[in-house]
Image 1 (tube, rainbow, N blue to C red):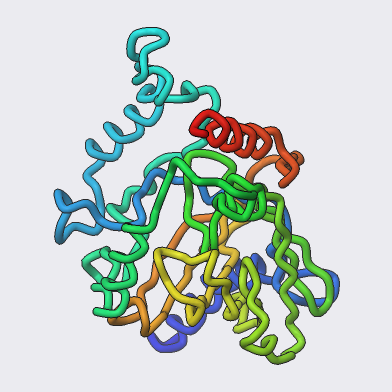
Image 2: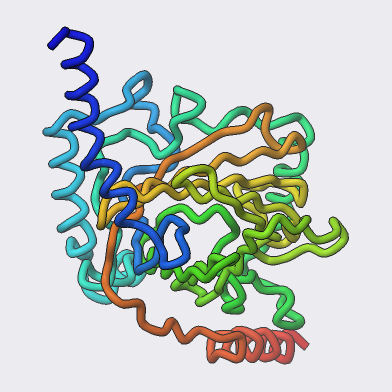
Length: 307
């Protein structure tokens, strides 16, 4: 047998398991199967810290030290009842931060792992927004509080990991993908039938998503964002393109690219591992919650006191 023929045989033998695995992750109607419960928890930061400039990966020792700090950090308490103790909130039992994935940042493009420079318009917008921020009221009604406190959404898209509740449930039907987000229990319904986006005059808290398959990858474009639910200070012109590719029984490769010419000088991208997790339980936050009663009642009490 010639060398060329041998190489062809080897290539075929190597490709069979991969092809079999890809066929394994299929729905009964033939689409790639992403269904199940997943977590994107990780302590890898979105942006690369200055001390790791020029480095994409941590050393094994640095990674081990970071994971050790994650395991014990929030159990190091200040004096009981002190302001520092109260500010530290939960101990480690309540967190699910995940662990380092070995990289120095989730952002991989640009290669420096940093969010690109803001446009002059965005810098001006950011400065005026900072001057207008008030954390002590006045709260005339629930609309004066942020969306998180009101239990409307936790954060805008795309979702990046935080200290807890980083879980998702993916459910598929022919022509649709639904992604349940644990907190605040929103469900994204993503059509796959090629329908156009909603008119730009119809903003959504989580934007308007449209998806399609590119081979084994689910590609979702989201537009029509509300100005009150902005990602990293972006405007309603934000465009998000997300990609989910199942690469193992317990692992999805998730990536997103965001662009907004009114905010950043160029688009940027990040990659976050989605790992298989257990059953999602109800996150029972709702807008008619005791926190709002307390905040608004406190604001009315302050008004009465100042009269």
